[in-house]
Amino acid sequence: MASPQELLAALAQAFSTIGGPEEDEPRFLEAVDRVRTIHGETGWTTATVEEGGLSVRGDTISDGDGPLDAFRRALQDAGIRELRLQEVMAPEVLTDFLQRLTSMPEEAGPLPSARFRGLEGQVGISFDQVQSALPGMVGGVVDLFEEWGAREEDVSPAESQDQVVPGSGLPDQLMKEVQEYLAEPDADRSMNEVRLRGHAEELSASRNAVALAELAQALLEPHEDRPPDWDAVELGREFVTPAVASQFVAQLGATRDEAERARLTDLLTRVGREGALALADALGEARDRGQRRAFMDAMGSMGPHGVKRAQRMVEDPRWFVVRNGVALLGELGGEDAIGYLTGTLANDDARVRKESVLSLAKVGGIDAELLITGMLADGDPSVRAATCRALGVLKSTRSVKPLTEVLMDEDPEVQVECLRALGQIGDPGVVRTIEKRALGGLFSKAPADIRIAAFRALAGIGTPGALRALEKGTKDPDQSVRTVARVLMGQD
Image (cartoon, rainbow, N blue to C red; front, side, top):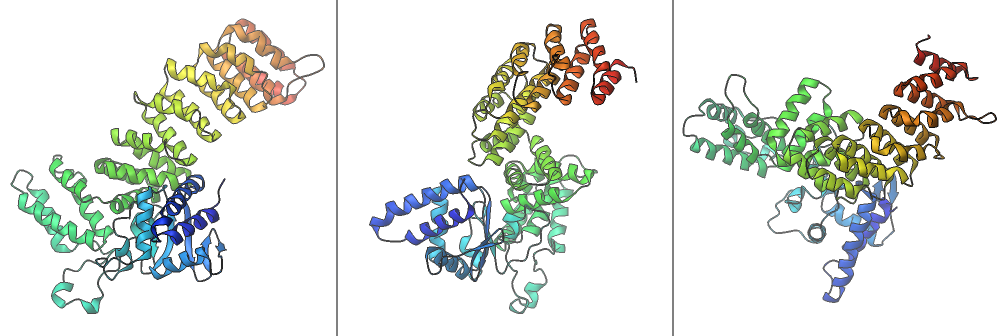
């Protein structure tokens, strides 16, 4: 597994070869390919630009006056404080970014972030002049590219009356125009739309994502006292940039209020494609279980947009992105889900294979059942245990024979899950086999947790023969096993 240090070294090497003589082009292309390969292995990486080097996870990396230090100086000269490498960049995007580091475009403007305008969705960059206005962990796209408003001393009194400062919300005049637009859904609103689009362009050009988000939200959200205004929704979608969508997702990740989560989920559903993209990015970063569940639920409510994004996620080189996509496909289902999940069953990462098995169980059907049964022979015990659990959920009678063979698995957790599955399926034909696991032989007995699982399975099958075997458990030499058996028999 590659390290963030190797990724930065590869980036520095690519930077050192860009713009060289024509004969260096193959070397540059090879360096770009190496960056992408390493990035696929390392996943999300954040590097802070410091005087002594580049800092990753608290460790400062430097190579004296070598390529890495030259790359650091270029980042510093460009006003970059932090570099966040998110999804693996396409070769042309990576090349564009490195070229912009090499030279300042004439049309870039005086602000550092203007130099990298257009790369907001592909490269996360935080500038020295940025002031974050977003809560949560998805502010990457927004707070990394937001610019300072014009300095007060540079603005004339006439201009300053309607000046929008990041974080201050919409000016009164613009809010009035929005209200006028929404008040007359049956009138000719073409001129109102032209004016609102003009305002949106100004907010976007000034990188005022907070105010632009307020404008889009005012148009997208339904009003209780009015019928649905789909023209307003379409107009609001036009104003949702990646930064605006990320702001909505950040708010969703930050709240714990269920009503607010429902509101923001509905808002993101109305946003459509940009909302799905922002949610997918957020899922890749989420470490908090509550946030991840909120993002998953929101993606699940997005219909075709959510399905399409989940399908893209399972093709990502990073295991955790694939796992999230697999989990989403399990939630969303659809006729194409099994085709994508079939591919992820062969993923190199056991965590992805495990999630694939559980998602196939949610999708259900004969094809899913057969695919899951085939995973009983997986090389990782956690996958085999999940497979048993999935077959129990499906109550798969076809898998009874393969499951009885798994009872001899060397991993105790797999044996426990296998017994649990057989109890859920309830086939009377396996009572004798389970009884042997429950009671053991004269000189050897299975561990207590396996015997308890076996007695629970017998209770689940519930036939007279199974109950007779269960009654023997009430005399087991282990107190914990006896207690469980008596409770299952209704004696305690």
